[in-house]
Length: 199
Image (cartoon, one colour):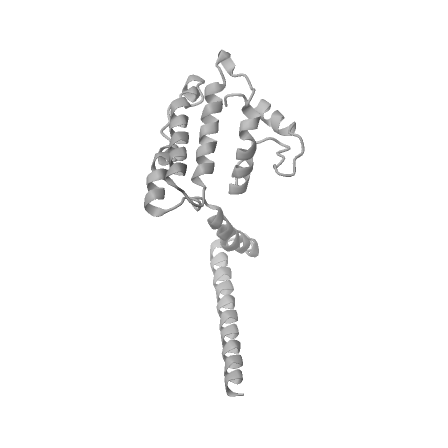
């Protein structure tokens, strides 16, 4: 890490209270399995955390700040619910700015290369948006919700021993209850419609 986990976490703890920002009392460097919402909350404060920190070895922090700013700009622009040629130009500018300044991570010894699939995929966003539409649903939030419904709740209903068959039985039972409930609603609606029609 460019600034060290202790300084980043200390800055998180020193953040003043704010109704619009999440307060990370334990810092952000020890977080694991970050949810989509936590990622958004970190993005809101990240630039403020590093803005005036000096880098090791006397390196200027300007390139690092430009890189982080460009990546954040790219993330926010990519989430637009609609795009024009102008917004896609902004997206391309943010992408180019990131790549123009990213070598600071190599100079600081943080990375040895940028063979990262997510970094590579950024270059395909504009073409994907032009071909397939906006990227505002290029995230896992919806599937995370399904994971809670279909995996966590089912696991908690098991006795945690040989849980897979129990989870499958629980899910099948839940689906049958939903189907039966829908059938009853449909049947009652049909009866009500028939009585209205003949009366």
